[in-house]
Image (cartoon, rainbow, N blue to C red; front, side, top):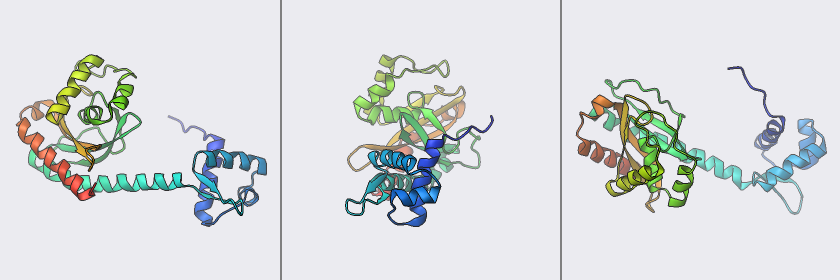
Length: 252
């Protein structure tokens, strides 16, 4: 696929944010205009939008601008996810070594799970899933953990988007999915029975924060014929232990 052209307004907006990072000081519209070689009217329009969104803020006395708290929030989110991935790597490796399969860790983002950590054993069969991969919630074990334990209003909104068929085992009925989510809430684990990819199965559990809110989900994933040979209770207990270790190390 060829490289797509950048959207000019977005490119200019990010150039403004990067300018504050480089200069590390408050700047006026005129200073930003001169630094970027843009007209004052163009800069003012971009600054106005960035300020309304919280990415810039204006000093009421000097009328100069600086980075807003929204930028700080994004930085904190990146830092938290980086810490989670590092902690998950260490906590999942013993699980992978014990069962000789791949362990994965995800977070939820805009109705998708994003894979942020992956642990393998010497006998693991290589999976297509890479760090940064996004998948739908309803057809993955880790995703169904999120659907089961996130606020019901958000869960229902995501389900209302539709359940597209991925394999012959994909649950495409919202009513059947609700029954599945009730099971997950009652038992504390989810199973992906070749619902996203034929031949691949997983067992997944949620990772809870201090307030019992779901902050992540982890899974043991591999070829369906190997996963089915494992003792489900032992796999679930091992995953729950890893999830608790992640929570304790994050101190959340």
